[in-house]
Length: 91
Image (tube, rainbow, N blue to C red; front, top):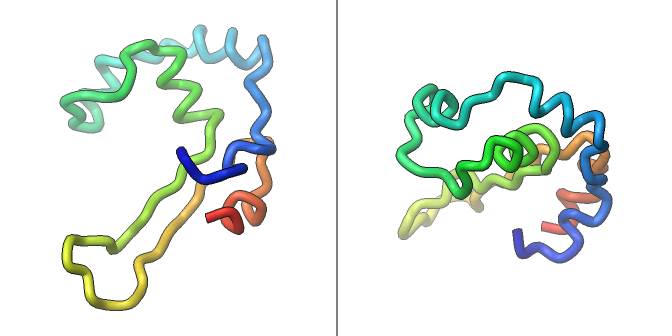
């Protein structure tokens, strides 16, 4: 994410959270099959889980090549430690 300050108040997962992630039984292969993904950025289970469960997301909706309607909408899913308004206001 290249938005300045987007990750500013996101805390790193604790050692206990990382231990819990590892013990969750998560499978990258199963995750990819369940969601129909052919490829993902990393195949490291811990990195995938951190991105899903501990990092904020930013999505742009309604943006299509040549889009001429109302402005596209965006949404942010905050991480557990971040403040939603803070992240959204940076975009």
